[in-house]
Length: 406
Length: 78
Image (cartoon, rainbow over all chains, first blue to last red; front, top):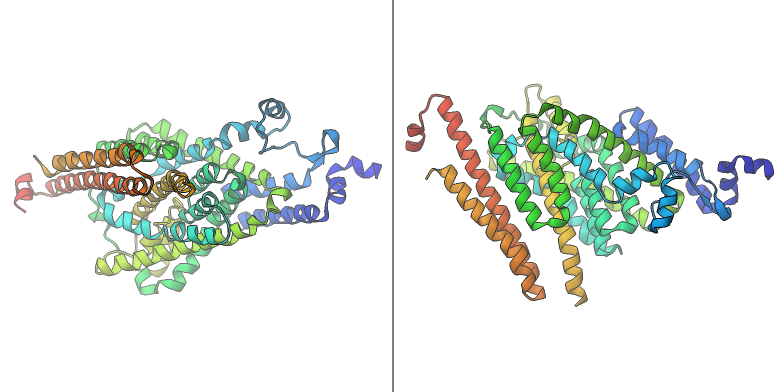
């Protein structure tokens, strides 16, 4: 036993409760599976590599702390006492990043700034109605999963945070769960990001099942998009930020972050654009993955609600994909064949994955089909729609709960 | 006043009215109506943004048509 104590990772594995030990081994294996999926390009490597490795490390390196308690020197997410927190900031190596960027939603906002700086809102302004209608269709999961989650026993805040996975927008999932379901935000965020990275794998199959090859190859005339000036896009970003922040102040940081990226892009500041869209975005995504992975310890995963979250998350992402395709098929009919139905799927706001998936499927069906500019428009509309739904949930749930209590 | 300017004025007014309804009026009414006022306000404000977008699009269409050979007068006649 003394020898075993020298290797505390193994010692804590053999001496902890059986269900904790099994969960730790299971999570180490799951971490390896994520790494394998990222290596084989089935999963999004940018986030899955740090997340998978984080899961392996956190579950393997449990050690004996003061007073014989088991713990780790990575991060302690539940500590709120200022004195204890000050001590932990000097011990746990990821604690500063978690405390100063994660628990206040800053990292989600940094990712959003990067996305904003890469986003072109031309098509959204040129064709606002089709873009927004397609995006609303692609939010089917965000709407339908909310009552289903309530029926499965989650409280309104947890249900809304789970339903927003259907928006397929990582920062939004993180932000909503931090505000509405702080007790479940780790598993909700992990489930959310896991399924978001699976959109590359799931949606091509959904397209093949639901859209006939002839319709997938419909060509669209991208020269019909009028040229919107930089000044107009700049003014649009300013007005939309003001209106959305006035309506939903709780989601104000998200709106600011996204549109500051858009405004900087349209201000012709190439160094700022490069800073936001490269080091800031990729750095934030890296630490987001690493922190999410290290938060996935055995105690978190053993919450019985986690299984429900896995089922509801998958349902949300599938329903949104189906809703997007249905919206696309309706747009195809209404426009008398001028809109490729796959643009509807791009309304799911996972930027730019869904637009790329739609373009690839269109190209596979017809080598002349170039739908990316339209798909990106629907994609951006999806981001804005998801942020509006996020704002409605974050503002409305406390209002409704208050009303029901009265 | 051009369509673009009209859309900006109308859109801005609608957006401001929606915000006032959602943020200033709704908290002052009783509970069941509070939610209705809030949602209607949100809808009006977003419609205002939509009207502004319509104005921008019309302006852009007129510009691209002008660049393609039509004069602004031709545009208005059309």
